[in-house]
Length: 233
Image 1 (spheres, one colour):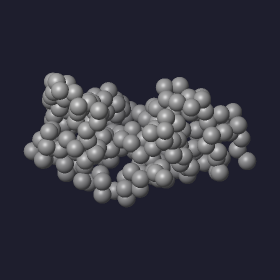
Image 2: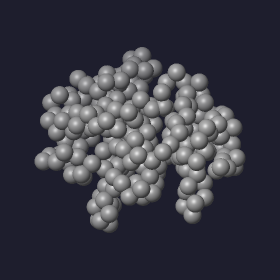
Image 3: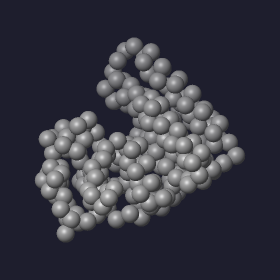
């Protein structure tokens, strides 16, 4: 049996199947990147719900794996050289799983790097900006009387959607073929227009390519499953 005792996180979230990849997550836009990817590639894994509402990411056990205190994180018992590997940051996890399985990333070096750049586009721009819209539109930030922060982030989110709209012209997926670029981005666009209640704010229905892409993505069975993993209590 695989020994994961070197990872203190397994003390709080014990592995029933230590030979499988261990996922520590919650089905947020960042969290579902990992679960959707795992569902798409068919790699056996065991999900563990980490409740950010109860500050479980700030426990010593979780921080031992991700000192930044954010989900998702993984432990792969069969890492490089057959040794267990712990990993955090959703973009790094997507790249690792793509390289491990050879799936959802082009083998051609140029196309590979172009795919990676769109993953970084989501990580550096779409995620932070859409998240700020969510904060100022739905959560505590909506109580702030000065609406200039919300207006700033709405304007930038509209611009980013425009970048995505242009990229998707004449193609079904960001890179033409479905890839980790789509996996990284789908959950954030979905959240922006549903959970963050910003559909009208960003004039989403005035777009053509992005809504069609989102609909195609959400129709994928692996995406549908991944959006619900880990199951909330």
